[in-house]
Image 1 (cartoon, rainbow, N blue to C red):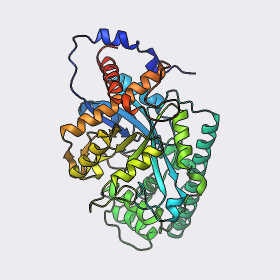
Image 2 (image 1 turned 180 degrees about the vertical axis):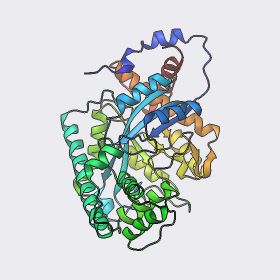
Image 3 (image 1 turned 30 degrees about the vertical axis):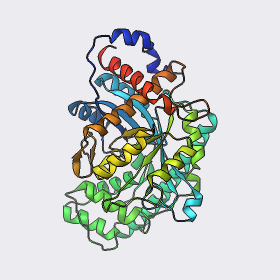
Image 4 (image 1 turned 45 degrees about the horizontal axis):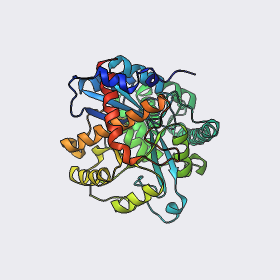
Length: 412
């Protein structure tokens, strides 16, 4: 088994001694959640993310792909080479059947009962145990069966318009994905199919509009990001001609997801959707106190947000409520769409985060860093042996993580 990098760092007393007298900033810039090409990402390759992080003075970066940790080795090596501190995360999609039956949305605005859920600071190398691996493999297999069925439906549409053209799962995977093909890969593959087989932009968009059943494209070929989003919306989402609903086997109950995360050494973390552009929240998130009570009952003491989706004032009030109760709060950009936006975390409309939010984000990253480091040294991290968060030790974990990150950035 490969060695955990954090285990090669010296123990705390030596780190503390080596840092004596060294200037330590009050906080650093953090992005705790980016997807990579190992699931789907705006980044064509991980080097792009590292280059952007350096240009934007981001010191801590967190990888977070759906269902897979295959990018950990490349991410770790890239962070080492670029002097960026790595956080090792993962994301799942689960299902709460009772909420689904009652039409209650959680953090998916379109699908009642569906829940996105993250694990933060997983052990690396990833070793969740054979039972968890089997469950994860089943989820991946089910998701890829759905993708294959969607490709079949797409091909039935494509051959009606141009009989010589076809999409193949293996080709899409080899050209646009790693080990996991997702809807967004299909949208990109379809756009490329048009570009590669029709001479003019007018012919290309005409081919795609024919797949839409004659509906006009709003973006056209000149805006690949908008076009891929449009393809996904018109053809691959519910109501689209190539849509295939997920089998329930694609989702695990939330408690099983939490068990997989803790077995893999991670911190269970709830990704908050919060307000939409009209200021509304889902039924589960509309009342922060009720959400707090629910998360606490599940043994969850960590939340994360993608502030680019949120109004700054609503975001700040929500984050402060959870932070003041001892929760770990992480902020990121996700980068799970084709649009290559900056890595610097901002609120909706590119509104800069105020200093208090940036400090809270930094402290959250420090807790995850400390958790990774302590577990690599066979010590207890932020999660107790019973699976509960050690919220009363958050401030101590912040200080440990701060020292570890500063040592990594300046002394190793």
